[in-house]
Every structure is written in structure tokens, then in C-alpha cells.
Image (cartoon, rainbow, N blue to C red; front, side, top):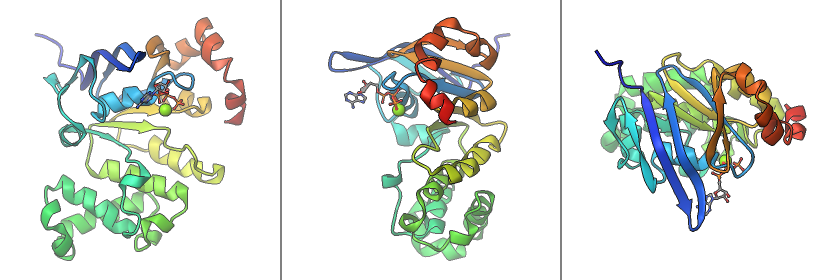
Length: 257
Ligand SMILES: Nc1ncnc2c1ncn2[C@@H]1O[C@H](COP(=O)(O)OP(=O)(O)OP(=O)(O)O)[C@@H](O)[C@H]1O
Ligand SMILES: [Mg+2]
């Protein structure tokens, strides 16, 4: 019998912007429960690859399968419904709405109740219960009633992650979840990432190598849009070329962490 298909499987992904090839023949496999880090220099194509996986960008070539099903032509909304979630950009959230409503909308979407939710929110105990659970889990209960836009940036990013989790994804794509967050607030974000459900496949882009090497069980190094190296943290740390092209070159960032 054949082995079961990987949860998410990208083959030969390719994307150009004009004459600039930003994603070049990239293969990537995420199994259930994966803890995979994507690292590489600025401009290596990490965010573009996440955009291709999430469906925010369509590839010029290559294929993406989820559970063995071809989802290459699915747009981001359809991929999210199929189980591939990414953190939303802050400006896609509703800054003037309370934190509670932002999270409840995602929960309701998951429950396919979004259309009727505005009026029915109070009478939908399941949505309210799940929203409160998430707010508790993310330490956001005390700001549930505050407009999202008035929260400190670090807590806004927590809301983003809570929303991504609310749709109960099987694959979660995190593009620098702690970027721009004051250093005093990054730990709570990293704790949340560390505490994610063990079954979710997580792909994280992160420049802080302390975080990467603590979190990841597999690391892909992207350079100029290509997979330059891939392996366990120990293999990547011992990889001469990676140290030269990336880790060495980024020592100021390394000493940041
Ligand atoms: N929409 C676009 N149009 C044109 N060029 C783009 C576009 N998006 C990204 N690029 C270019 O593609 C390359 C890869 O960008 P990408 O944002 O994927 O890199 P990255 O690895 O995420 O970098 P960083 O570490 O700085 O976040 C860069 O040269 C960038 O300027
Ligand atoms: Mg990026």
C-alpha cells in the first residue's frame, strides 16, 4: 500500500515578478504536526513562498497538494476553508471593532454562520464560548471589549494569531509573527507559538535564530528563491555554506536575539 499523502506538498513552485525569479523550483513538504522554519537573507523569497502556499499569489508553475488533493488553483479564501491559514495583516482586521468581535467573526466563519452573525452573536452560545476560550488562551480576555486598533501592537499580533487559530487550520503559516513587536512583548507571542496544538503543521518565517533553533524540527534555507539547504537544526547549524551565506552574514541579527 502507498504511504499516505503528506498534509501539504508543494512541487516545483515558481514565481517571477517581471524578469526577477523570486521562487525557483521550490519543493516543500509539511506533515501533520510539522515544526518547520523558513530562513534566508532579506529578499530571499520567504514571504513570496508563504503567499504561494496560502494562495495570496498564484504560481507561474508548480503544484500544491493538500492531503493529496490539488489545491493549486484555489484562492486564499478557499485554501483557508480547506485548512491552510496564515496570520492576517493588521490592516485586514477591523480596527474599530472590539477584539471580541474580530475573533468571533473568525469563529463564526469557521462555523459557517458568518452571514447571520451580526444579529445573532449573543444568541450563539457556541461561538461566544469558543471566542472566550481563545481570548483566555491568548491572554486577551481583559481587552475583549476594546477596539482592536487601540491595543498595543504586540497584542494586535496576538489577535491575528488567535484569528488564524479560530478557523481551526491544519496548516498554519506564520510570517515573522513577532516582527515589530516591542521586545518586552515578544515572549508572549513566542509562548503562544510554542503552545500550538501538536497536530497543526506550522511553518514559521523568523529571523531570530534562537527562536528558530528552539522551535523547528526541520529548517529550509532559501537563497535567491531557491532551496539552498534543508535539514534538522543540527544539520543546518553544521552546514558550512549556510553559515557563510546566511548565518555569518546576519551576525548582527543573531546577536540581537
Ligand atoms: N509584488 C512584488 N512585485 C515585485 N517584486 C516583488 C514583489 N514582492 C516581492 N518582490 C521582490 O521579490 C523578492 C523576494 O521578496 P520577499 O518579500 O518574498 O523576500 P523575503 O525573503 O520575505 O524578505 P524579508 O526577509 O525582507 O522579509 C525581493 O527582491 C522583492 O523585492
Ligand atoms: Mg518577508
